[in-house]
Length: 259
Ligand code: IPE
Ligand code: IPE
Ligand code: MG
Image (cartoon, rainbow, N blue to C red; front, top):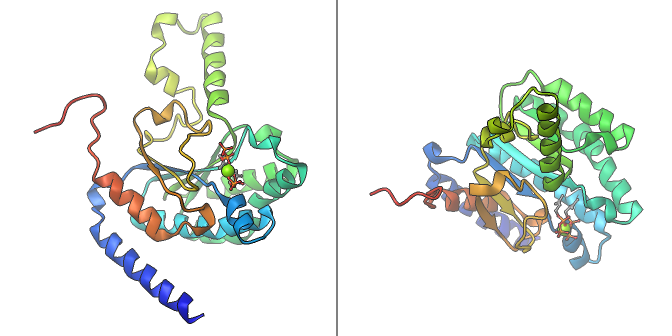
């Protein structure tokens, strides 16, 4: 118990120190996180995987508050991928119930923070109850004007790209669009992220050094930040560390260093 208190004090000190180093003028506009490592976190403690998913919800709360307090404009969170349906039925069922549990607990506090909830992915395939709670949250927060909290639910980067290709081909076929008019901006405008600013920073906890079909197009020039920490152990200090690291990088977009 005492050790825990010392740990917390130490971590608060680190947070304060990191927060002071952050430059408000150089904040990333759009940050995305692959919330990974829940299962392994639980395994390590001899707990069922679902205990890890539940613990991950506490991290979610802490990181949303931190991003909001810092003044980040858009936070995109990978909650369920198009490939996650491959998991055992009991785990998928549990994950499908989480948005409800989360929103019941947190919607009020998100409203107080003036947060706008958005989603990206194929909501159609979600169970009706999940879909309804999510849609209700979209509706309730749509007139807010603060940070955009964008949940990737049943999201797949390849699926998103194929959808854009299909929509564009359809327009060409119907004569609404000429092939010569297809360019990067037009393509961007057919993605789920069409109304969001360019992605600046991707954070992936859990030690995996891969993208796992997340934001494939949007990641072209985003900065990447990986950590071994599992999502339920990911704290404000890690988020601040990632932001600070981002601020120290030089983004050249293929150009050269400006003297
Ligand atoms: C992330 O944690 C949550 C989802 C993918 C829904 P995982 O469940 O993938 O945890 P690990 O990677 O097995 O530890
Ligand atoms: C990515 O994590 C998806 C989410 C966090 C929602 P996964 O656990 O599904 O990715 P892989 O299987 O390790 O690549
Ligand atoms: Mg995983």
